[in-house]
Image (cartoon, rainbow, N blue to C red; front, side, top):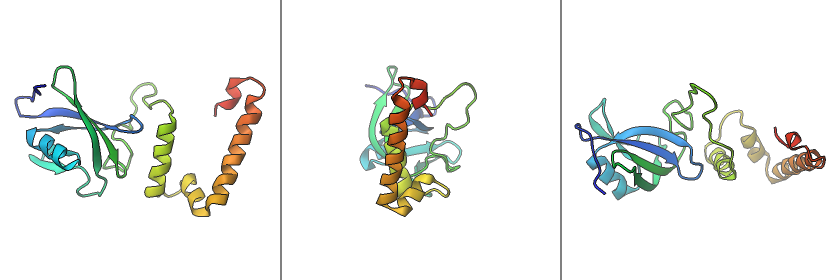
Length: 167
């Protein structure tokens, strides 16, 4: 497919978490940053303000490991699926899209998203995180917590009222 870069040689690029599907960020690529991304497997973009290439994570260490790149039907936008090394946003948030303007913009729950969150907490501990507390206490504490939660779901579900199983 022929990609359609704009008059400045740029193409809008959306980055999506490869496991959870969450949109992480939006940036621009030019031909050189796209080629570097494909060559290195790390997301590289073109900074419009600095007028230079930048590899996401080169300062923070939170690289985006590219799993795939797709073009939209018109060839004028890209979708990059990636696995992040940590928070994607410079604010420390997982995604740059955390300011909700209308409705609930959060992606629906999935086991993949839960597993990704747990893995991220393990690799990048977060102050005050209950998940990190459980990791710190060890396997016995984790198994006890899983047992408690399982029991609560079983008891709530026995009556047939699905509302009782939703937190």
